[in-house]
Length: 98
Image 1 (tube, rainbow, N blue to C red):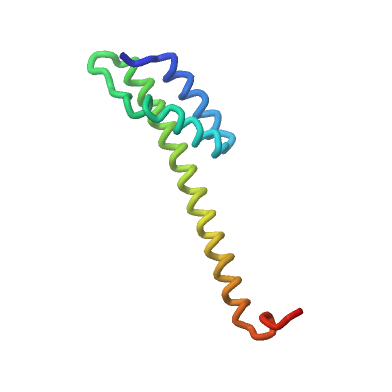
Image 2: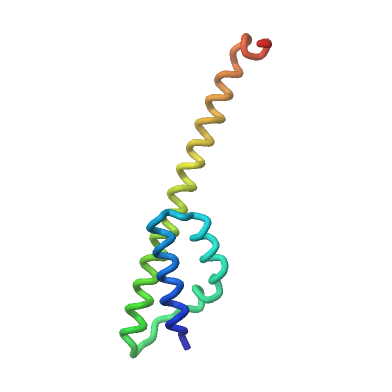
C-alpha cells in the first residue's frame, strides 16, 4: 500500500528544492528515497492517489530536467575551458614564459 504521507512530504521537499535550484538537495532526496520512488504504482480505483502520483511525477521530472540541464552547462563550460587552455599552450612564448 502506498504511504500517502511519505509521498506528500517527498513531493513538498522536492518541489522546494526545485524552486530554489538546490541541486545537492535534489540529488540527496532522490538517492535517499530511490526505493520508494521506484515502488510507486498507480491505483486502479483511487483517483486521489493517482492525482498525487501525477503531481509527484511532474515535480520529479522537473528536478531531473534541472539537474541534466545544469550538468550539460557545466560540461560545456569545462570543454570551453580546456579548449582555451589548449589553444593558449600552442604559442611558444607561453611555454617559455617565466
